[in-house]
Image 1 (cartoon, rainbow, N blue to C red):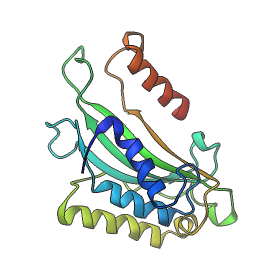
Image 2: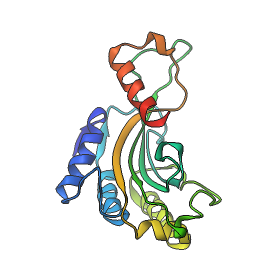
Image 3: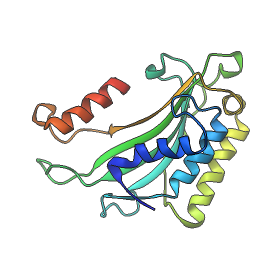
Image 4: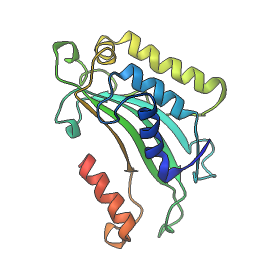
Length: 194
């Protein structure tokens, strides 16, 4: 299956619904992970071809970010470097987009360390096929299995969840020069991530 990059969030939402889940209230991280893992196998069209394998990656992130009002969160993220919609003023750079399935949990004593762990995520893994991908997936699950706070999140029911998709990283063009579509994407991203 080949999906145009702007449609990736809708495809993930549809895959979640196909499993009888609600994208805004998934039942568990484990069920969401199975869907996300299948989503990682889908090829995305429109990615920047000159990124030496760094155009598509994934990570698992956790913590107590401001967008969740400091509540414990767990996110399954896919990072995409897409062909820029405009020429950058000082050389070419692709746009970096982040698609994530974000889950937020009611605070519990078992989650006390979620914001204090030595890392707030798995790091971004690239190399979507073959042994490297299988190793990366195993490493992420190893972290979940060996960190008690993550084990507790993994076994819990989220208060709510959402699929978000927006630009990430430094902008290469002043906001005031965005066209209407770029401004809408930017405003959506700002609304979600501050």
